[in-house]
Amino acid sequence: MRRAVLLTLVLLNVGGCAKTTWHRSGSTEQDLASDSEACQRDAGQSGYYGILAGPANMRDFQERCLRARGWTAQTD
Image 1: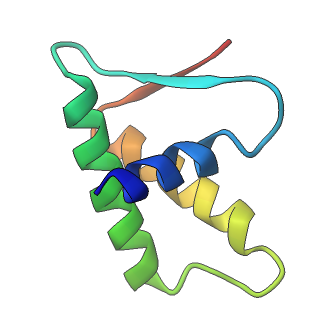
Image 2: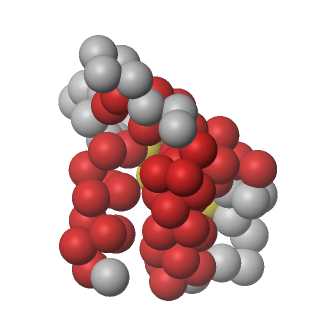
C-alpha cells in the first residue's frame, strides 16, 4: 500500500517544481491515501491512458477524481 501511495504522490507532483497539497476539512493523511489509491485503481480500469499522453492523462484523472471526492488542491 505504501508503494501505491508513493506512486500517487509522485504522479501528482510530476508537473513541475510546484508542490501540490490536497486538503479536505476534517480529513486525515490516511483519508487522502485511501482516496488516492481508489482513484488510481479507477484510473487503471478506465482505459484513460494513451501511449504518448499516459502520464498527463493519469495526473488529470487523479486530480479530477480527488476533487470529485471533496478534496481541494493548493499549489505552493
